[in-house]
Length: 391
Image 1 (cartoon, rainbow, N blue to C red):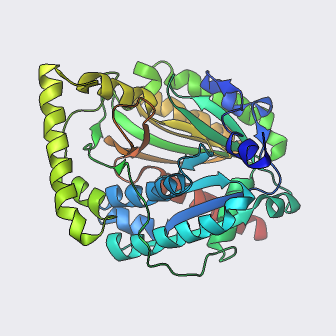
Image 2 (cartoon, rainbow, N blue to C red):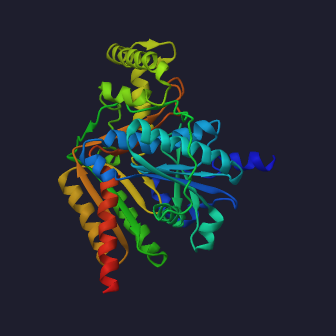
């Protein structure tokens, strides 16, 4: 196996975690190979866009980075994580130039079609390690068909900070359209069934507090495990079958204008066919709408580890209060910093190349700000703490 084949298979060769509790364990992670880079991106002013009711568009922009890079790299299984208003994708260093072209095209498309400003950067892992951080990856099986990457070591967070400071940015422009094949957001927001949907971001205060932080993660998981499906916002039978013209419109914006009408009509017909097949429980060839909906639920990434715990869970009031008490106590003890946002629904953005295959992936966020507003809450706390230390 040559070096390129080894790089392409790095993620697939990682041990598969089947219990989410394992994502907080150091031994679960493998360092990224030397010479790799992190493609990082986020929306500037996402809070304002969310306040304007554009949370679907913000999620679409964040997921477009993952879609464009994976499609542009011939669907190689590289590690990635969706952050609501942004994303991180780890790539072999030999793909740096190609990744720069793709990121530039996504950034310019997001600005032209979605009217949002997307920051993009490529950060070498060697620079991350020189700064005293690392990028380690684990592979968690959300279902028997889909595995998501988990990141630890602080490197992804450092890379994001560098991007926001204007370093490692991609300055070139691009007239090319990104390949966003499979990216869609046809599902309407999924209403809470336990009480409310809570988006949580919890970061360890330091490496020294990691043992206590791991215990905190285990305690949080234990609380959510008392709820239906561990607090998963999507019911076992899948999300409710409803759709909006706005969602379909966003889906076709990555196509040249002369192809949009046909794509819009095709998407609408697909949705109608899915609704009919689901209601009648009939199959269309190998496609069964009810099986597909169940796979959607199983394959969704409602919890993850990205230099800290991120989860969007559906909990009742009593369990939400217990989660908040655990986090507040840990924060007071200097174990973690956290941000939280509450809403009445969850939002799903999908990456489905073909519904005939079961390895489609689905990104879960809070339906009204989710991770972006939890991150704002966290950032405000960190700023207050930094000001207090400086004073």
